[in-house]
Every structure is written in structure tokens, then in C-alpha cells.
Image (cartoon, rainbow, N blue to C red; front, top):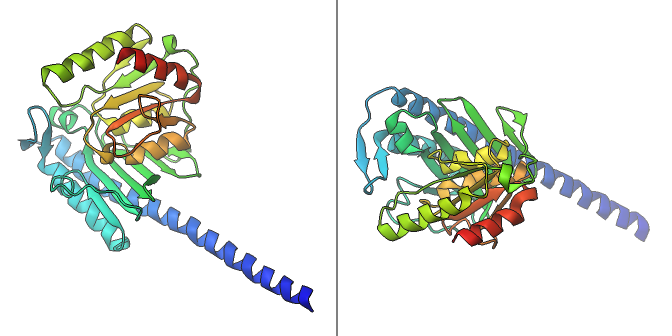
Length: 291
């Protein structure tokens, strides 16, 4: 009798767990699908604006914002809020501009509506929409879309990373000297920061094959994920919207994300490094020696 009761309870629990897991999987698939829709809609706006005269404002001496940035953020947030009204939202041009960037454990959409605004203004086609979802402060869903090159990078935690629907992996490069490094100079122009930035680049240039600056942190991370570049770092970028999507895409492509010091990655710290696992230790050593 007790055995039959136990088996009945066990069967009920197993059925409940299976249903819960299925619902969870379905939820993440829905999160990704809605984010892709939002990115594609914003991408249409960016693609149209890319070939038109831009109306540019300055957030700093070289940090730019356009009406396209603002229009895309409104579009993305409206789309996401229609589907997930209980979620939290952080965006570069709205909440962040008003000083609201606190990240909690709640599901939070973190959006850069147009990463690579300077590229956009100059007609350089390295621009993208970046939409990331964090849960308990961990990047869980990532969408990065370059509408000019029509490249869509996507990932769900534990489900792999993809470029236009095809699986992607980080490179298998194992030597720094034959690695391609990407970084960004940032938008700060005081002498101390510029000296530190250029000294670091000078030091690293002796240890790698070459260095690139693409002008988009999100696309730099995607470059790691699909094996186009082997090493990436950036210090002092704008905020979590630059990395929330790219971090999960890199991880799901088999890459590693970490602080340039070698410590664990902190999405709120404005410091990031990424590589394949084979060159991580040598890369950290090179970064430390260049500081």
C-alpha cells in the first residue's frame, strides 16, 4: 500500500518537474523570439537612417547620440514591454541617461539600441542592436543584430550560440603571437586616460599578430564568438548594455569572459575581456604586464 502511494506521489512529482522544465524552455525560447523581433524592427530603422543625413548630438567630446538611437530604444522597449510587462528594463538612452542603472535579480532587459553610433554617423557599417536579458544578474539571453551586414547573433544560456541560425564557435588559436586582438579606445580624452590606453596597446602589439578597433563592443564580443578574432578587451565602456548580450553569446560559443585583471567578470564594472579558453591565461598575463 505504502509502495503504491510512494509510486503515485513520485509519478506526480516527475510529471510536475517535466512540465516545469518544458515551460522554462518554452519561456526562454519566447524571450529569444521576442528579442529577435525587436532587434529586426529596430534594424529596419537603423538601415533606413544609415543612408540618410543624421542629426547628431554630443553626450561628450566624442560620444555621440542620434535621433535613430532614441527612436530604436523606444521601439525595442515598447515591443518588449508588450510581451513582458513585469520585467525590468535598462537602456542606454533612457533609463541610463536618467541615472537609473541599478541591476537587480529580477528578469531585466538591457538594451543598447545602436552600438557603434560613431560608425553609424560616419557610414561605417559596423553597427548593431544589442538586446540582453539577465536573470539573477546573469546574462541569459543575447541578441546582437547588424542590419547593414544582415548578421544576427543569438544565444540562450545552455543552448549554444548562432549566427543567422547556424552554430558558431570560438577560434582554436593557442598562441598569442598568431592571435588577432580587438579593443576600443573609448570616448574619454583626458591625457592620463589616453596615455594609459595607448601605452597598453603599444605593449600588447609586440605580443599579438595585429590589433583592430571596430567601434562596437557588442560586435567585438560576437567576433570572438564566431572565431573572427581571438582576443578582445575594453576598459571604461558605457555600461552593461554594451556587454549583456555579447557575454552570453561568447560563453555559448565556447569562449570565456573575464575581467582584464583575471578576476571574475562583473557586468556592472565597465571592464571586460574575452577569448577562447586556450589563450586565456597568456592573455591575462599580457594584459597585466601592459597595465
